[in-house]
Length: 398
View (tube, rainbow, N blue to C red):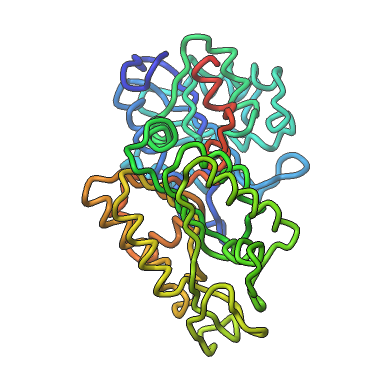
């Protein structure tokens, strides 16, 4: 398989699928350029190798063809700045004769952005004819959009057919896959997964898949109370999925059968209101009074979580263990962050993934203390569920 490190880009038009789906304000100014910055190493590698990057991306969810508010035009100047003043042009479309002509005329070191792929429904439908037209704009294809790798779209997977040998991962996908494989396929033991968040229902498949891999599974956040209630506990007004009580019991049964140490909060910080001004008290997780709800892990639970985390060789963290957005209920998640950083210092490999977890590590300054932060969202979750991602399989020829 080709790699971006050993491929010769000299004189080549390199079609790169990136994820430039960045947030814009009402003045069409970029409010967070994280995704653009993530693609810079790949773009720079092609430029330094004497090639011309031709950028493909979507932006937002246009419904009926081209719409000005979903144009990639606002990204042009900013990408030029990020690339130190490189010439960046934008095509009026992503396919067609005019676009092909612009692509052919791009000089080495210049960058061409193709207009929003999702102005065509054929993109999300994975239409082969559309993929063929996109392929006409380049000599090779680089997939560097891990955030969309779980979609079998024209630009993320189907296009690979037209580059049987000249296809490869960009640096972002390479690092995502390498880091995820360290966790999923070859973890240092003990392997601990921390699964937080509000709902069991959104994490069932991941939890079940992880039970075959982990030594310890810490369950925190709102999903705690579905397990507590399944075991006969009183959860007051805490978030709880009554339809998943049997699922919770089954997960506990599977953990015992597979020899997994399942760690669930034994005490919680309960509150009489969902606010910073709420009255709070620490209570056993199965003895929450009516009118009160569990909003963070209690001190006994935090100590238990920390002890497991700090002895771990591999740590996967997906989801907070409390309502960290409200300072009063951030203690459990901050304590977990500190424990993960400490374990990482002592040689553990730690991967943080999922929107809330990433926001948490950035907010509390843990980002530099963990091994890897994945910003992929749906693709990350599907990879953890053990699913084959079309955008990965297409490059690997699977």
